[in-house]
Length: 96
Image (tube, rainbow, N blue to C red; front, side, top):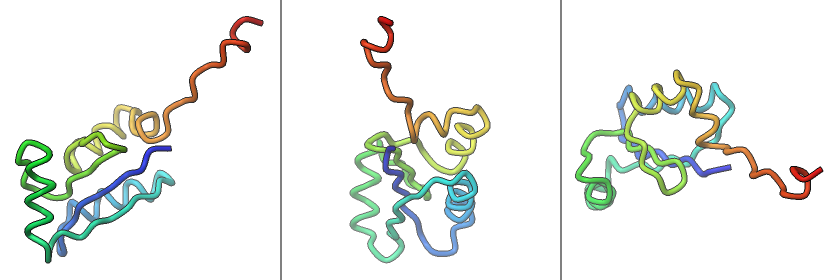
């Protein structure tokens, strides 16, 4: 299972919505609060092409965007696959 990391600020409705969506689907996440740490927020922003709004959501090392992108993955039935990709088939099993 991939680690989901959400960079958030206080009083952010989209941050809360992203956390609710993940929780409702049974996924855990790591929340990193950047509201009081503008240097950390700037560092994360610069890693992802100067994306400036929160939440900034990562699945593993992949930046997926904010709440809208997370919700689109869920709506398209791709969120679960991104977070918990299926195990590759074992060659021995395939050969039988």
